Structure formats: C-alpha cells, structure tokens
Length: 291
Image (tube, rainbow, N blue to C red; front, side, top):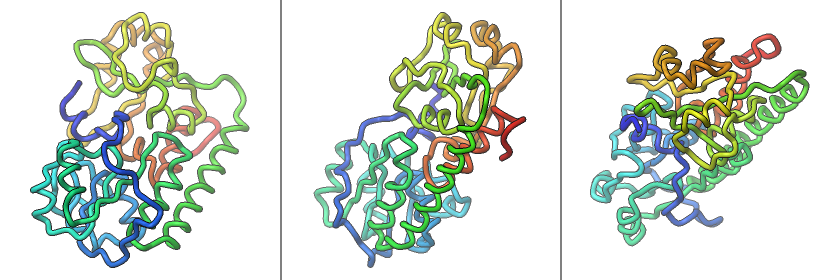
C-alpha cells in the first residue's frame, strides 16, 4: 500500500479502537489547551468555534486550512506520548483507533484526561460523533444544533436519492494500486457508507473492510465508476487506473469514469458529510442531481 496514503488517511482503514470510549460525563468545558487527534475531531472543533482552544493536532487534521498552522504531534496511529505531553495539554481529544496501544496506555495513566470519540464507519454515526465532541468540550447546545442540521441535510439527500429511477451505479473505491492490484473498500468502511449515501452500490460489498482484489474479483465487480482519494501530494490518475487490464475491461474503464475527491472530505463522516455525499451523487447521476 502507498505509504503516504496509509499515513495520511489511516482513519479510512477501519482499524479497531485501542482507546477507552468516552463516557457520558466526560466533559471539560474549562479545557483551554486541547490536543486534537483525528481529522474529523479537529474539523468538528472548528465547526463548534473552539479552534482557539486547540494547541496541537495530528497530521490527518487537514481541514480547515487554519488547522495546519497548529503544531503537529504526528500521525494518529503512530503517536508519541512525549510529543503530546510536550504541548502541555489539559485535554486530549482523540478519534477511536488512535495509537499505538502503548502510547495510549501511557497517556491514560497520566493526569491529563483523554477522551476517545467513537468513529464507526456509518452514516448514522455522524450526528452522535458531533454530539460527543461537543459534550467533551462543554459545547452540547452548539453540537446539538450542528448535528441536527447535518442529519437533516443527510435525510434530505436520502429522500432525493430515493426518487431516482433506473439501475443504481456500481462504484469501486480504490484506496491504492500496488503491483497492479487494487486495494478496495468493502462493507463496514467509510467508503462503503458514502457510496450508499450517494445512492450507489458498493461493487465489492461482499468484501469485509479493505482488501486487495484479484483480477477475477475486479472483473466480477463490474464497476460503473472508480472512486479514489485526491491526495494533496499525488493521486492515482485515470491512465494509471485503467492501465490495469481488469479495470480497463470494466464498464468504468470503457467509459473512462474515475472520480477523485479529497480523502478527509469524502471519508471523514463529519460536518461536511452531506455536502460530500451530494457531490459524489451528482458525479454519478449528473442528469438528476446537482452538487
């Protein structure tokens, strides 16, 4: 797997949580030196207007652009306890799956509270995720308003999608290409959730998690579109994707349909999820939906 993709968008891989889940009474309204770990957590903190309370963030926290001006404590699955503590935080707010386990254990044993935000890869988790972050930083009312708005926009999109006629598009999310093999997203992944929100079918929904596909599996999947992440440094081009014979022979290859979207935007399942799902749907069904 491309190392850059693995580091930058590890949240997409569905790795199990190693941090203790947040409890209902884990609230720290007085925290003023927050270390935010996880791109979606950071995005939510900004949406709640508490960005001035963030003293550092991890390397997956790429939105909004102002987040990049904060000190970087490293990749969320390769954290250093020393690096985080050196920021003198009074709260560590992390997406579930942050690690490694030894680092999390050290942080949990310390005096600085660590709150883990559950991040199941489902559309239904978006609202609860926002509410959990809001509760942790003492902004429950603001989080409720934001979550309610996001859920309403997701419901509106679902209603619009439900009115579409004709066959649903089959979409293959390709995380990477390695030695001519497609690393694809099956069920129980953020990519699967977004494909379904956009009114499409995951072409490899029989697969669990992220798995490399054989040529036979790609041919059997018969995707109408290939979906990839448009990474800041580099992303897979259509020429690269359709140079693979199995992809070239697919309906997507025959029509040249490759859709590239920013990774955090597409897979973060945060406040921008309705916008991202609508944009994807508009690319899949341009005659029926607008961004």
